[in-house]
Image (tube, rainbow, N blue to C red; front, side, top):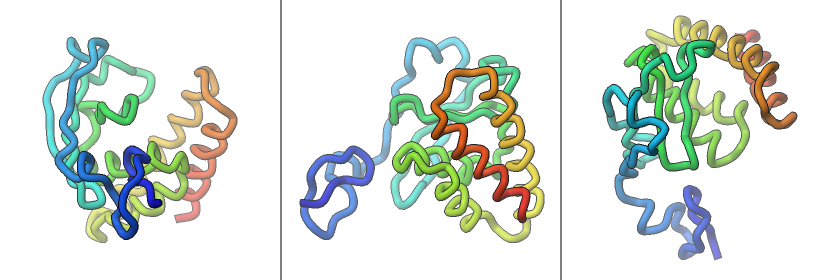
Length: 159
């Protein structure tokens, strides 16, 4: 039996997502984000519509451009993530949450970035991953996660 790529429920062979995941992914604001949620948006990622929240950059001032997918349910980005980049960056976050592989998600992310913004986008992501690697030197994280974000930064430096 196959498994849904989003929730891991058993599904019929040949399908990639279950019926409940095939609809738009709605957003329920957790208590910790209620005071800092500034707005919302929608983005299509791998054929699924996800709603996301735009949070105040004050949530994590030491990490400009932060993103997250809390519990695989609450997709968010900082207000300072440029609008034209959000689809790609949020797609990365969703894919990374599903696979646990940051570098693979980054490569897939970059495939979707239009050529006319790709050089600036790559530079933006390189700066972000430099900050992320430094940020997690002082934060709790698994060694595997640290290796993944470092590998992503190393890859961006080759582009």
